[in-house]
Length: 396
Image (cartoon, rainbow, N blue to C red; front, side, top):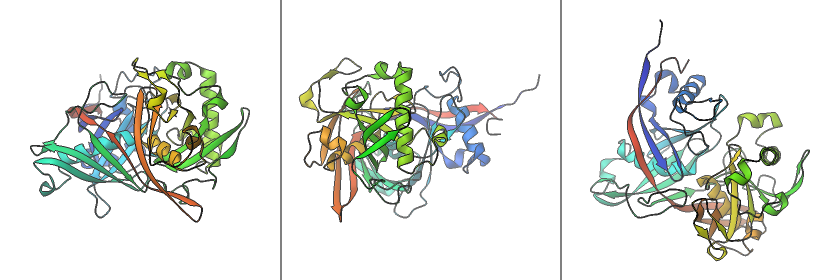
């Protein structure tokens, strides 16, 4: 009986924020997968276990959710004054494609520790105790991320008492700074691609919705929860078990993608599931998080729920958190209005797993808004390291 042997590829399985994924050094990938293309995509899909019509990822490293179907490739920096290039691939669960159109803010957290442990950061910059700033070039969107990694005895500190809603156990706090996150190269330098802070978004067959469409962290379409019949306190079952609701929300996302100029036809959205994100916002209201933790209305500025890869996210994407904080800082957006209006440089929002605080610095010059940086705290941890195995014909 004929068979093909399995490849052994050095890899590290890491949690970053409320996501986890398989991390590779570019040099460790098979030669044919070291450049973008079909061979690389096929290899990463097989690593994750996609496409899987059963939606389980039983035969791969994925977790069958948008938060756990991820791969990261780290390479020496191609841009001066940076330590590494970080390339992120969102692997579809039930379809044969990898979406390279955006960043993963959560896994950005793990890039810093991985870069230090993998020798990408010069030893003379790693103190015995303190913090190391890893300068990351986010290659998907061409942006700089500063990852402030705690170090103890010359090694990355992973354990600690920092608690992050959506993650069961505490760990060491890692501070992320997203530098100039408002232009992803597709929006012509416009933080608001339509030129407006609020638009009337016509969704064929569904209706017209007030929408704030913004590119900050990741392209995001914000709508009012009330316009969808929600109050902003919904948890995953209320959305993900309702096929009609999922179809409606996807139609809004697709209409937003077209209005933002990210796609030209609705059909293109099938292979662009990662961006833009769709989120709905509502004024503060008490609710019980998915873990049973009570969230008081007084503890948050606004409630936000976001869709990721066609499903309601269990917490909040890191890049969408940047978009939330940025939109909240600009008067007149739907997020700002839901949060009570006014100007602010930090916002605490409620999501299905709890709360998150994010800061954003924005400025207006000649009626043009930009965000100079966004800051948030996350955590990261190595879950397993060694080799991932895949059949040797996976990249063909």
